[in-house]
Image (cartoon, rainbow, N blue to C red):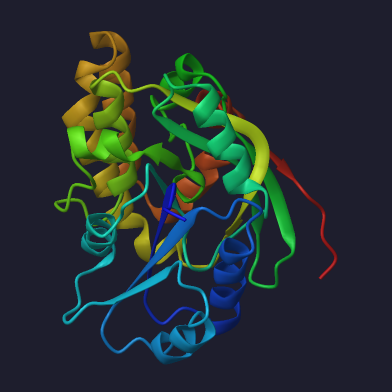
Length: 280
C-alpha cells in the first residue's frame, strides 16, 4: 500500500515511556496508509530500542543522522525522504488520538482548497494528567487574524499537502526556533488556505522548559513577524503586531508569563484554553 501520509518525527534522547506512547499512537491509527519517518540525532539512547520495537512494521523508516543537525534541519531531512500526498507532524513526547489521521485525511479530501489543517489540543503534564483543552479558530479568516498575536494552528497537529512544501519551500533553517511560525506566515503570504478541525485530536505535553527556551523563542518569533507581517495586514495592524512582539521579547520571563495569562492577551490571541482541575 502506497503511503498517503508521511508522518515526520524528529527526536533526541526522549523519555522512553513518552516516546513509546507517541510511536504506538501513530502505528495504531485507524487510518493505515502512512509512512512514519523517524529522524534520530547521533548517540540517541532510544535508537536501538525503537528500531527493535518497530522492526515488524514496514511503514517505519528510520534515519540516523551522522552528525548532529538540530531540530529544524532534521525536519527537512525527514521531509526529503517523504513520499506521501500529505505531510503530518507529531513531536516525540506528544501522542495522537487514534482517529486523528482518518479525520484529517477525510477533511482534506472533502476540502481540496484547504492546504494546511490542524486540530485542537489537549494539554497534558509529565504524568499524562490533562491540564487544559485548547481550541483554535476553524476558518481561514479567523486563523489568519489569530496570527496577529499568536499562532493560529498547533504545529504537532498539522497535516498539510506536500505539494505546498514543494512549491513554497519547507522549514527555514535560519530559524532555530519559531520555524513553524515562519512557515505558516510564509504560506499565508502565498495565499495558502488554513483550517482547523474542531476536535481535540492531539495530546500536547507541557514540560517545565519554557524559561530555558524563552529568549530564543521570542527572538525568532519577532524575526518571523518582522519578515512577513507587513505583507499580510494593513500598516496599522502590522505595526501593532510587530511592536507588541518587539516589546514582549524584551520583557522578563516572569512579566511575560503574567501577561500571557491576562484577559487582554487571551482575548487578542483568538484561541480558547479551558483549564481542567486535576488531583495529583
